[in-house]
Image 1 (cartoon, rainbow, N blue to C red):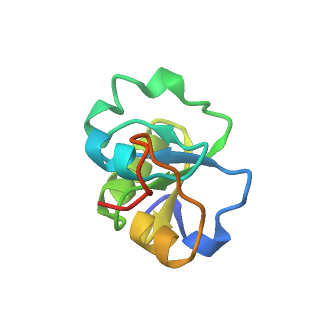
Image 2 (cartoon, helix red, strand yellow; image 1 turned 60 degrees about the horizontal axis):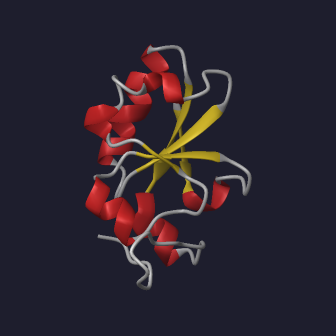
Length: 108
């Protein structure tokens, strides 16, 4: 049982604050436009970069890391929502992607 919600990709609002907890190389290859990038292992040290009063839609590649991040964030008093299926589902749903390497965005 978890203290946070899990939602499918299609239920993420267009103006949502998306927290991507994947590794740097995954982020560079492709991510949601406007997302915040903090790799899972850096989250405790970079917590102050997040707004505790904002709903955070937490995403990774398939949902495992985002589940752990949402669980931890909720324990710290943040409103975290896990995105089921992660960036794999984001891509399959046709949601927009951008990359930081000048190449066509892809999900690693």
